[in-house]
Length: 92
Ligand SMILES: [Zn+2]
Image (cartoon, rainbow, N blue to C red):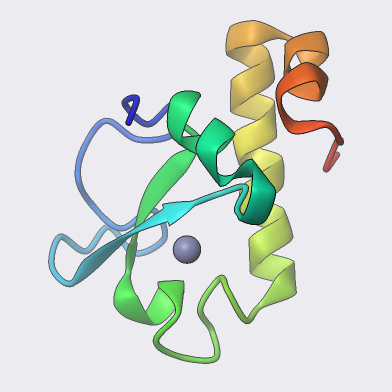
């Protein structure tokens, strides 16, 4: 797995908490492998991941927000064309 393009430290992306962390692939399903390869993953506290209703896997607004922030960062690094090649659709 490549280093995350979103975080340098191992801490929750939302709360900054450093315990009970889960690794979340920002673009999952069929795009999970590409997320791995391109560092599109973040640390989340369990409740913001999938252990409560506010978790990113259940809160589509939060999910989209994180996808958009990740796409923006990716495009700063590699550009829109590469994003479209790798992930096949834009979230912006
Ligand atoms: Zn996840």
